[in-house]
Image (cartoon, rainbow, N blue to C red; front, side, top):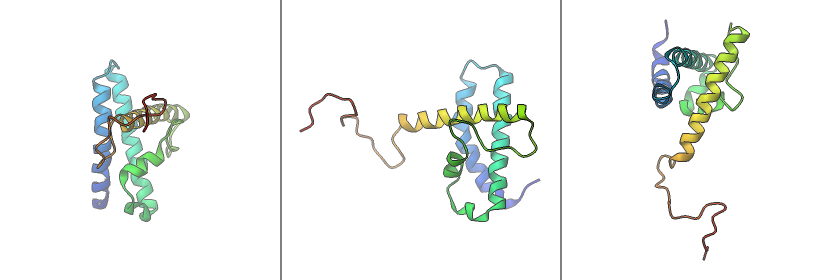
Length: 129
């Protein structure tokens, strides 16, 4: 089924996916659509674990970074042995996950940062002395 060494990165991927899954469940998507996204996240996790096994040096990198490198606004990696239809569905999930992760990252300060809510932002017309 899998290798013992794949469990820690797999668990970290599940932790990365959990907020997205909770978001999907709280949305107005149908159960069938949510299940399709869950299936596609399973595929994404499998592709990332495959990458770790093909290039062991990747195991030194944070799983969160590998996930961010694997997906973007256009979709995800090419899936092994997948049809065009499966790839389109997979890319749709990856795009949605990418938007969720980038939106969430902007909405919250990065880990270790307190966030300065009083700091002027771009386009803010407050006086800067």
